[in-house]
Image 1 (cartoon, rainbow, N blue to C red):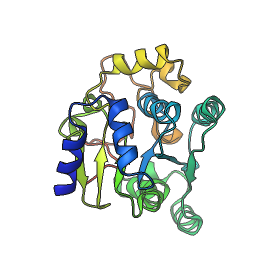
Image 2: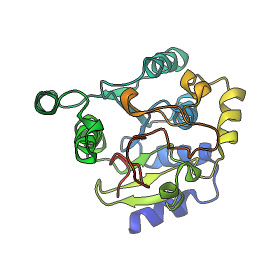
Image 3: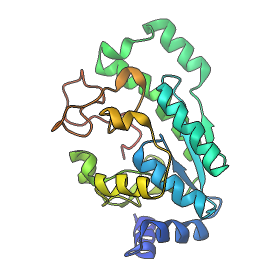
Image 4: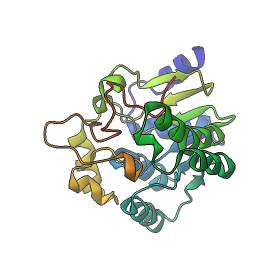
Length: 232
């Protein structure tokens, strides 16, 4: 898409911090960042908040998050004193789904799991991204094979906007070192073998040598474990 090419040319060769500053200036009021409070997202939130960039930061509260996630969420608010806009699932959709299928139906089939993700994550995300031009994410290429095949600037056909992944080429060690050096609050589950953290019932720790996203929807036998947030 032409707009994605224009954005890529605009920030080509810039550091993550520089790219965010340029995009914030050009697309002020029309650029957002989605955080789930993982290592990568905390890095980007830090870059946005410390530079007072006009980028709205938002999160999706699915209602099934870990206690530790709420902890780092609150620590982030205390540290930067900046708002994090929160989107919740549509109450009627969620009530009807749980009434019909029960609270843990996602274990029973991929269809049920995607239905749960659709209500708790995808629909709220659609509201958060409505009429926006730029969506900033914390995606890194080494997180999964699927993500390795992405570009760091891409057109999202479903949401009709440009997605930018400013730390796409950072290694996990680079992320962790930056968090430590800058004293950025992070989710304590990362120290317990959780490289990727989503809803509590759907996330487990991974063993040494396991794939980065092996702990997400671990009961499913599939190669591309995505919930629909980052499908094009």
